[in-house]
Length: 125
Image (cartoon, rainbow, N blue to C red; front, side, top):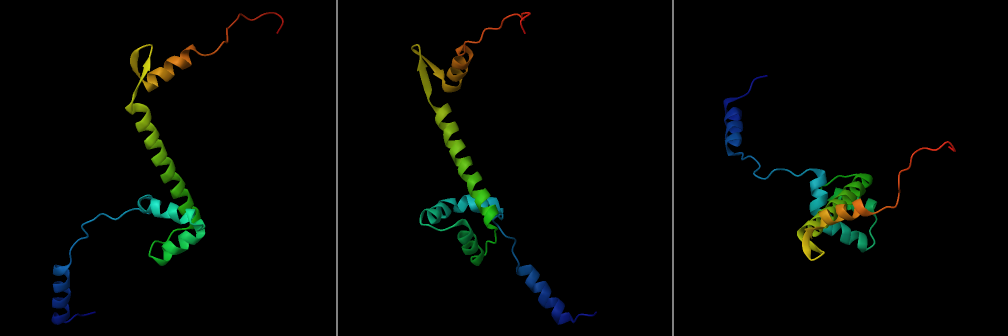
């Protein structure tokens, strides 16, 4: 196949004018995380997950309802776990008049709880 000089010049001109995309593309999971507040608001208004998936598809984000549901659940759990971690490690707890980190206090309590006493084996077993 042969090409004319005019066609090659036109293609070269278009290639020179092209700019790379400056923002990195988001993965589907990142897109769901970013849209999570709106998606949850839609669920609160009575939309089903499959309806939300269809609406996303009409707006250029094709995702299966089951995938959307899983990504929304993970995003919610991630946000909850992050908040819980920040809450637990941000504030010291007073124990016996001294400030102790919350996780140290939990470990101390766990070590002192329980009433099991180990005994030697007997012949009755």
